[in-house]
Each structure stands twice: as structure tokens, then as C-alpha cells.
Length: 393
Image (cartoon, rainbow, N blue to C red):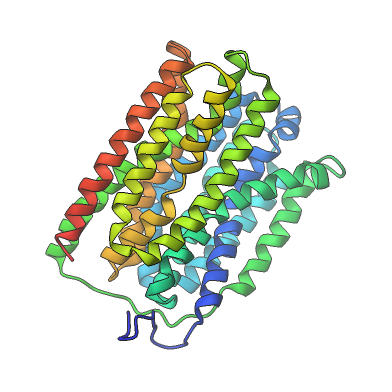
């Protein structure tokens, strides 16, 4: 609920905006780190559990597929029980998942089962954080807060990468999961106790808003699928075109750094021009499509520019999407963003699998072309869905 001064307020205990933002950041990191830690330690885990990169892709796809299935139920739980309880439940589930991998992952299939069962933590943490930010951060700073929160995803990747030399190569990869579980458990004490104020809306309005959110969710599926495929296949595709793995990997690192900066700076500009965010998202997706198309061209310059545009900008929009959806649908932020977040998770699941099949059946240039077309389609659908939402505001 927003007060007359443009700040977010809650009934019950008042939560400061900095505390709410800090909790959202740590909750998001804690709830999403299991899958990124598996990716970062894939070499060590794969050697012991005897699976190939294809097996890793299957495990990650299963995780995001389960996250997609859990997203809408998690949103309903947040609306019913409040963001504090669900954030803590998500963190606890992530801790259990991390410890289960450390103790019980003895094959690829057991690893997949553990990740899938723990994927609900990701959905719960994301949606509880969205609700907390929407209700306790001043409206004029919500764009920045959502941008910083979404930057937690690349931060999780950096944590996973740092775990390789610090823990995995010294005492073993299983201890890296134990250490991550201890760190994630610490986030429990950073979740503030909130007096959540559930909102209700008319059934007619909710039905029409759901249709608009589904359109935005489909757009998110197309965009997330294309961006995730870039992160999955870039190095192998570059090597196939005659570029050495070193420059290919560094270009992806550069793209990730641009992505972090774009997510934070994008949130900052959202607070200055809140009504223009759909146009900004569409522009980012269009730039991402250009980048993906450039990846079909040979040569290192095309690779670098393609990654900066395709990954750095084409994957920088989730925070803006959450901000725009919450701003246009404030009466139930968890329920609203659960629908669009389902699209993001679905893209993470089916994008690499579907585009990987295109690469196998044709070649990588064909795959990048299909991904570029999908991202352009996402830009168009994002505009359509937002216009549908605006008619309800």
C-alpha cells in the first residue's frame, strides 16, 4: 500500500527501505545459488558423478522447469502467508538442497532429483522479495531496488566461480556445497519480520490482468530462452567458428559485467522515467536480437559486440519487467510476478534444449538466427502485454 508521500508502507511493523532491499538481495542469492554452484563446479562434479556437458544441461533444465511449475503456487503462498514466512521457507529449502547435494548426490539422476525438489526455493525467494520491495521501498526508488535485486543472479554466478579455486580444488566440491549452505542459512536472520497487508481485487479485473500477464510471460519465455542459450553454447559455438576458448570465455565475462551494470543502471533510470519502461525493455530486447544475429557472423569483433548486446543488454530486463508489472498491478505483487516469472523459468528450461536441437540439426549460425527472431518476438509481445495491463490501471 502506498501512502500520500509516495513511500511504500505496511501495516504492522515498519520496515526501512534499505533493510528491505538488503534482505531481498541476500534472499535471492541464497535461494538461487544451488543451481549456479552446480554450474560453477560442473567439471569436478562431472568427473565424480560421470556425466557430460549434456548431462549438466539436463540438470539445469530440470531445475528451471521445476521452478516454472512452482512459481504460481509460490506466488499464492506469498499472498496468503506473507513475504517473511515464504522468504524464510525458501532459504531453508535452499539450505536443505545444498546439504543434500553434498551428502546424497551419487549420480546424475540423484543430482537432478535434488535440484528439482529444491527448485521451489528459487520461486519462493524471488516472489517474496518482489513483494517486500513493492511494499517497503519508496515508489521513487523501486526501480533501482528491483535492478539491484536482479543483479543478485550474476552475483550468484560469481560466487560459484570463486568456489572453484577456494574450496573445490582444495578440500573438494562437496565441501563447497556445505560452505554455501552455511552462508545461505545466515540469510535467515536478515529477513525482517513484516506486517504484510494482503490485497484483494475484483474477479473480473484479476481475470483480465491475468491474460495480460500471460502475454508478458510468453515474451519472457522467448527472451530468457534466447539469453540462456547464449550463455550455454557461446564458447562451443565460437570454437566451432575458429576462435580459441580463451577469448570466447572472456567475451562472456565481459557480457556478464555489462549485464550487471545494465540491470543496476536500468533500475536507476526506471525511477526517473517510470512510465517508459516497456519501451526500454523492448529496446533492450531489440538490441539483444541484433547481438544474437551478429553471433552468426564469423570473426572475433562480431563475437564481442554480439555478446555485449545479446547477453549484456538482452538479459538485463528482468528487474525492469518486475518493476513494471508491480507498478501496474500493485494490489497483488507476488501473484502478478509469479505469472511473468514462470515465463523466465520456462525460458531457462526449454530455451537451451530447443535451440540446442536447432544447432544439432543445422548449425550454430542457424541457431543464433532463430534466437534473434525469438528475441524480436519477445520485444513485440512485451509491448502488447503492457498495453493490455495499462488499460486496467
